[in-house]
Length: 148
Figure (cartoon, rainbow, N blue to C red):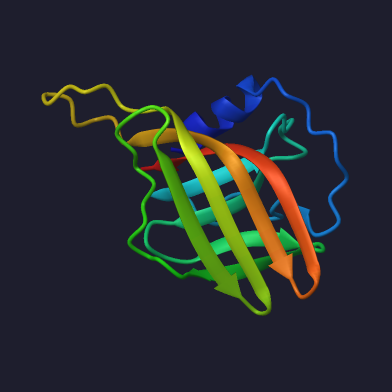
């Protein structure tokens, strides 16, 4: 999954134009290898600005808040965001030590509808990631995906 997500980030064409005050790239970019979701700022330029969010399938997630990778727990662990049609939407919510994260995305690429092909397990997504910490709130436009 990570090779698919990283190639997706290289292909992003819209430049990120804001200065983040809460979120930064994860220090440990390999924190959630395997099945799960990963998101980078729209227009991220690897290797300096990769993932700002990563999660494990039905498990914890990580964001970097003010320079520290921070673990989050899913509020809806059964939400997988493995969507079947282009344009379908998905929302994921996470919470940790005074931090709330909401990811609201739509499918930009889904696996082909081929009952004989079980090898495709990735959905590409784009949308918004919002972090709230106390009175501070930050919204980032993101691209990424979920899968195995």
